[in-house]
Image (cartoon, rainbow, N blue to C red; front, side):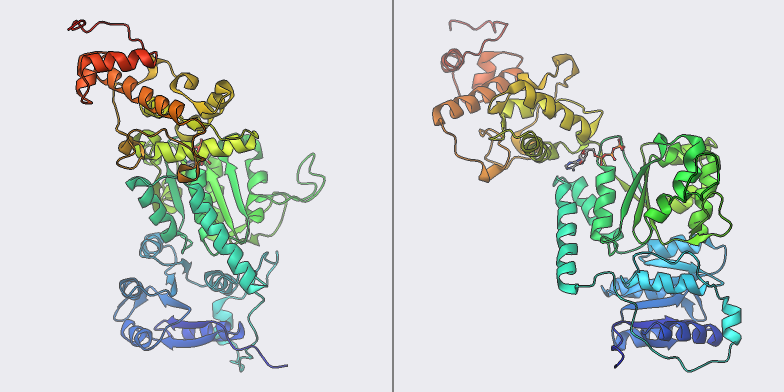
Length: 521
Ligand SMILES: Nc1ncnc2c1ncn2[C@@H]1O[C@H](COP(=O)(O)OP(=O)(O)OP(=O)(O)O)[C@@H](O)[C@H]1O
């Protein structure tokens, strides 16, 4: 049987010949095609001559740094995944490398088991699960072994067995994840761009934002866009787990480890192996657990409660908090070293009130979803007046609160449209600010339309006159609100005389409480 041609080509840059040989032997055995270089200059010359699947570079090189190679690749828009090897204990270097776009880093002395794992992971050929006990080989031992002729073999089977269809599936997942994140405000565009960027690496990401802004959705999008999308995404709310159970929940336990442990159980880390672990409300972790988490991240292995040996894990960590973690560090409630590790890249998910133009598209999407879930057809439309009222509310609970509010409004309205009254928002909670339809995510020229979930796909109105009346009613109410119920001023702002204004208000049964003093003119 012939050996499959190597599917992946690698460039290894290191100035120490012994280490180069060690990496070379290890990688050739995995079936990769390989080139080596001993300096930045040498490495760049090779990169200029051809493309590779991945580049593995030492951080410290005689004529510069591994970062020079990373930056060159970034400038050239090259697609090679990069792995950086840093000196032991130099967390700053590792963080710097991840920020510069490295996929992952390894610390010297390099553990060869971890080395193979990280390279495989960078190339998207992570095995679905890892053996729990892997014979470890120290670099020093291996380097002194008789160099035997490497026997190239085919790379381990890829997790995606039926390549085309699995790839198609991965593409669909990616589209779905980002698609669920509705909103085209500048802030959301930036969040989306960051998702695409960070999904390519293993860098830890800290999501920061108020409750209900969509941090978990962003985390899922990062996972779904990443090469790990076919592996598990495990979301954990750190604040919801009793302190005495944290260790067992995170790292698992062995049968008999404590009363009630009647069988072995996996923890979150093992469950997320090969995939992504999302730790929500990380700021709620007690200090003792923070230390254990830090150790697991540094060692890339975990020890279940009651177990003797540690088991390696390959997990991408994403975390989220609504707290100001820097302040928590200052107050001594959060470990600085852990904060430093988690916060390599920060994504701020802004509150809904700061991206008011997203209100309309998000409301449409949410309304469509909850109406479909409830079997309500057709999906009720949100009137312009209702949307204008939503825009005046601060939404302390953000998108989650909007969802709840629309749920309730859907139940209360019972009809084909949801109007301002159905929202149940008391005037005392509303802001004075007014927004134009385009500020609320409408297109210029849509000023007089009723906001309809589904946009252009919405069925035509069955009663055009009633539909247009509704539009007109919403506009007149808004104009009156803007001008403190002064009918003359409200009418004038839209090119209507007081007489025309009164006529329209009477026809549409709009009453306002105050006289503007110009009646009868
Ligand atoms: N941009 C968005 N488009 C559509 N739905 C969204 C958006 N952002 C959030 N949601 C929805 O709002 C709800 C709350 O989002 P999510 O749970 O991600 O928020 P969170 O910031 O993680 O909240 P918490 O901090 O309370 O855990 C979810 O149902 C989510 O699907």
